[in-house]
Image (cartoon, rainbow, N blue to C red; front, side, top):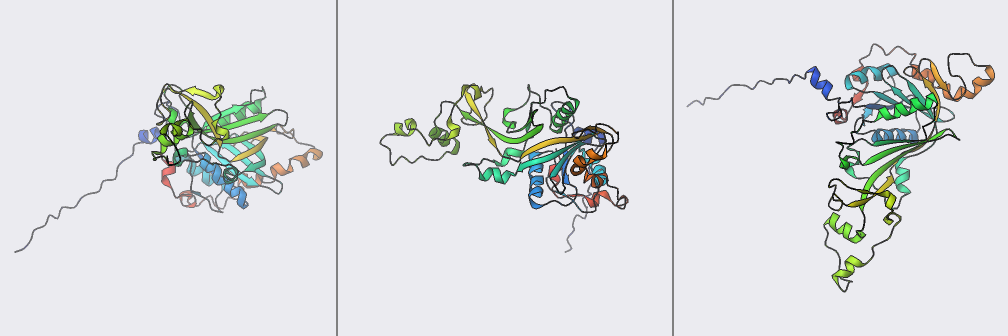
Length: 357
């Protein structure tokens, strides 16, 4: 007897993403503001430590950045700019290296301005972790963007105001009325020294430690591990005996806050907790050397060497700016041979989750 089968085939219908839905994915549903996204890449050949610094900066800019952005030698600035539009990328962080020192450019897409910083000193995240007795880097530390704190930029100079605005817009805005305390786990601190004209760039993790609770009890509640009581005469010894001391055990009244919601098993609402900051890197010492009106080009709005406009500089002053302008030709991408290539094939993103909200 012949068997009859249902020969109906399932039809696959490709979902249609409306333009309004695509725009909403780039907008914060709480604040209603556009979420800033970034590309961190390099121009020119970089040594090994600077490449690792590039990866540390990508990790710092998570989650709204391309962590596994792949670059090719034939890519120019226009390639990145053409891909940035559809992906909603608003800022470029560009690393380069001259014979004297490395540089960091922070640019607003698509028309600028561009801030150029000379990197005097830097430390990688791995170097900072190795210098600490108990390095701390939880897995969920980079699920939310960091908070931004600016110090010392209150001067009335226009270039400092523009620097403040640029760094504020690099990270998403927060609404203090609706923000969840559990999402505030990192902080980026920029401190400007008006005497040296240098900017100290620091990256910290935030953790809360309950006040008035011994270290033994806190570890017991967090880890749910049965304590070793073999060497104790009574269970009260486990509670009253002081634990291993450390520099982070000190409780300062100025560093304590009263929680409004539960954050963990030991950090409960209406209880006091001490705010602890632990550096996770990278660390940089920056000097603002130039501000350009366009995207890595255009009118020079500020220069540390006195060329604040389009005026010609004397030959005696041009030598001081040589190290800042050695890689300008690369950033302007004068080579137009790659303009006809497919930009989406030239720049690949291996981890698509980093580009989604």
